[in-house]
Image (cartoon, rainbow, N blue to C red; front, side, top):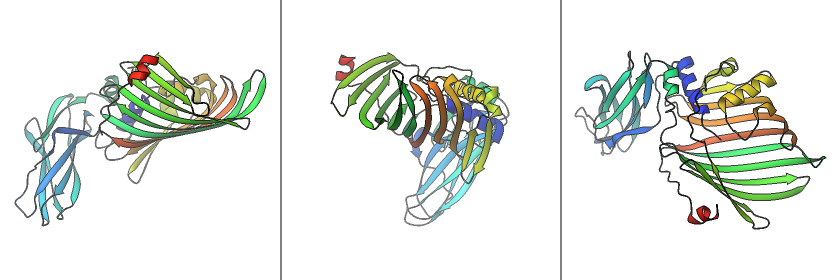
Length: 348
């Protein structure tokens, strides 16, 4: 799946919800650093997560996790500075051996580059004139991400003029490094065609703009290889479409923002799929019904999950196909290294 939908969602959040912080869980220059203390009991360390960009008129800053490594409760004060000037500070009392998280934010009135600092951790961020300017930079997918994806589909396949009931179940683990533009995906697929079951395992490595694939039929043990150009990380632009705004609703439930795209007609469903470009292998014209739901952490604006339900008609060999897919984000910014095995390179 392509990740361009994240650009739409983050821009929508800025434009429609007035959230306090844009963030991609980037740790400052020194990561966990000693912080300011007010002299009370306790020994402290702090881990700083900076906003990576912002929009003029919106508040951005840093989230600070304060850990009391001492043996007594104590109070810690953290201060956010911008270009060397203190702009926000908070004190937090932390029990011994525990940690607390606080947010330090500042509203930037003018677009420019600013240096943020909390203790010894620093980050230079760009504040943009508008959400569209931010989107145009196509810099929304930074760092790394690990996700689990589950897809189920049922329908009718027409093969050589004969209709067959078909059921497809897929589960995948996806490890993506946006900075290096690499990805590894392992997918387990079970297909039941007119009562006959087949199983296969597919591994895909995306490196240097090329997708290398190894597929094993678990029934026969047959292994096939493929190599194709990949535009998974291409800067496509043009994500902001009227069709998306018309079918979008935004709600906050507890600590989540829930964004739902629910087009009313088949034409709008096709336009929404095309604008998001979620999967280039599926013809937008074949989609007759579509609902997409995105869930985001309300504090950090980190994506937590994507789910969609789609109905396809006259797509490829399928007369009809009902699809449900859910992608849960397991973690952000853990180490993700993608290397193509030698045997895969040799066989493709």
